[in-house]
Length: 325
Length: 247
Image: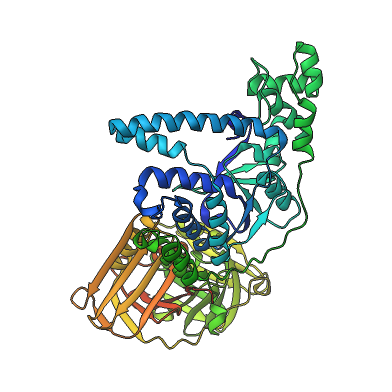
């Protein structure tokens, strides 16, 4: 998921939840994926599988994950991926292949009754099925959590929304958010502790780079959309960009090439995004409808989601004393 | 006119009670003693403090108003050793406060009171439940709740007649019940409200553990906490707005 090598470049600080205010444009696939992997790892499948065998672990994940936003007076806006960018289909294809391997291994693990292996593999074989895509949107609707449909990458759309001032942060684990120009990105929103804040301006200032140069450096290292140049890691990339100015000059000097380099660059510089979205920021979740959807309609174990719904119900906003004067 | 001598402890307790909410405040120099009222910028927490003339070694005032930078004044108070006396004299002409601590003279420039946030109106609260407990029990509750959550629920169970504290985190919970036997006094009434621990923690810092604290509570209502200091010649009332469910 994204380019972990960018972590060595990015300026990242822990930030307490209480210090976060406003709207977070969440990369919905990325966020859901996190919950799917953890839910499936720690919860027995019977709790989130319908009688006909459809897995809806996403519903459990959403009910666990949404309260955190409500409790901290943060408005989440879920940005769903549109069709994959043409270039990304290679990676998706290879993820699919990898999943097939995992599924074969899972079969073996199940036959052998190796619980640890099963848990590990189950978490990796999770995917956003049609059902998951659809039921997630349905549940968000009942929880009054706004959903925005991105034309392509959710992350790019989320970054675009922050740049336009309609959201305050991008929520994504993916370091690529930086390349899409996300000014402030919150990572680890799904984790127990404090989130991390990745700051674009601080990153550029720290390395004395422009965003274009950062994108070029990332392409040299390798992104979701291209293989990097062998032997170029974060340090070398930064140094080379600093010396030669841009990606092409670096490649020329080293006698290397990057396949589709131009198009990858274009994809980050001018991602396919839209201004055609709107959402409300005062949320009024319909807990009863959400509970009915998850428990009655999809047969998720009521006990498993009770806590999450309670937390949403009880999530409260700070009042002012002037209310009583 | 303002001339007073006060012990370092009394001054420090006074300043600490206020500085948990604001950086600057107005001090009313009344004939009967000092009065301070302040609210934090978000209008969530309020303090109302009075320090009677009897709390001072000597006290003379005629109703003036000064504005002070609390951290500056706290630093000065910190120069005094425990048991030492601090002497104040206001120079009306220069609007400066002369402070003396055992030969040390400090001239403090005051802040224009008009530049300090307006003093709040005190909310008119009719709170049905009242809990009187030792500061250390409140301390303990707040510390435990803070380990698991950012919020704390305080309430009174009317049927079984106890005061309770609840905090729910992502994974861990804290629950504490104090019955009549554990409390100094309990007046039962419908009460349950949720509060931000950020504020409560700060207020709690100013509450001595060996002090008797009275909590007045309602349902989704602000909490009022009052306690005495300076051997009863000083009184602090905190008010904290609840977190309420959006509707």
